[in-house]
Amino acid sequence: AWHEGRRSNAADYDAKLSGLPGVTTPAISEDCWSIYNQYTLRFSGGRRDQVFEGLKQRGIGCDIYYPIPLHLQECYLPLGGKVGDLPNAEAAAKEVLSIPVYPELTEDQRDEVVGAIKELAG
Image 1 (cartoon, rainbow, N blue to C red):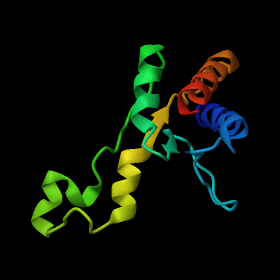
Image 2 (image 1 turned 30 degrees about the vertical axis):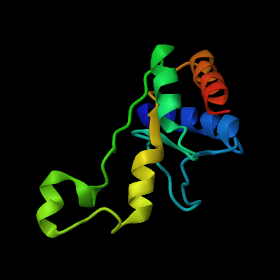
Image 3 (image 1 turned 180 degrees about the horizontal axis):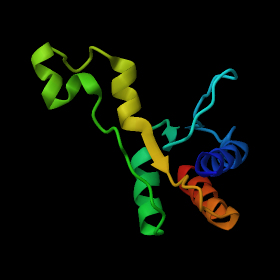
């Protein structure tokens, strides 16, 4: 039931946020399924931080769980990773933001999150 609640919430977000310009929803292969420990969106055009701050100001829980790509994290620096080595990972770290997906989330709460994202990312 726990995982199904998260998956149901994610499906609702997918339906309501897919196609929003500059916002990429999680891509899950058709032959796989996710438990959506996080529901992470990607915001192009440098808008992630404004969306993050705007959601926080509205009291909507959100977080940037991966602000530094793995190869640039301090514990891995001895392996020689440098800025520019993995440009896709570096770009993703600047563009991703996770929004609430916990199973108890109501439709009204999801709609509030979606409405705020549409307003802030537009």
